[in-house]
Image (cartoon, rainbow, N blue to C red; front, side, top):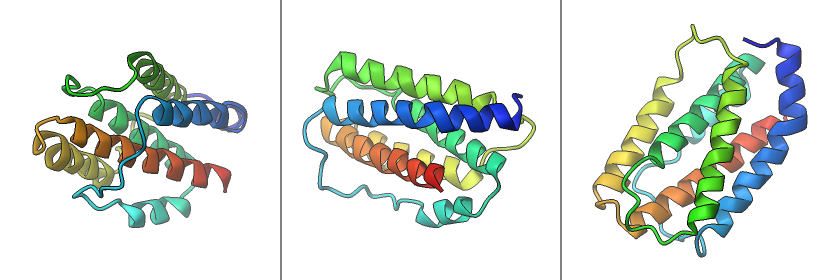
Length: 157
């Protein structure tokens, strides 16, 4: 585990740049973001709870969220019509962000269960129930954008 100072420095100087990159790629890899709502409620209360948490808990939460997003994108993507290079670049930057954040937190602490449960529900009620359709992936892209934008809000605080 890296020192808190190193992690603060990395988050302050690199996290925002990578975040801007992957949010831009997320927008560019497909068409307009869908207006349809996902059948799983966004975990707003969980984010409010994390807003008041300590630095390491926030880093762990950010890291777990990015990890869960990368797991979602590891599904059957045959129906997706997104730009493959931009999608791959998006996932590579997310992976880089995850690896850097992972080095900042103790592996001894367990990730937030409610967050894992939320992403499991998203996978079940959107991807699997909608048979990994293009429409399902567009909902996942929309929810992913919401999460990544929300992570930036508490990064700024």
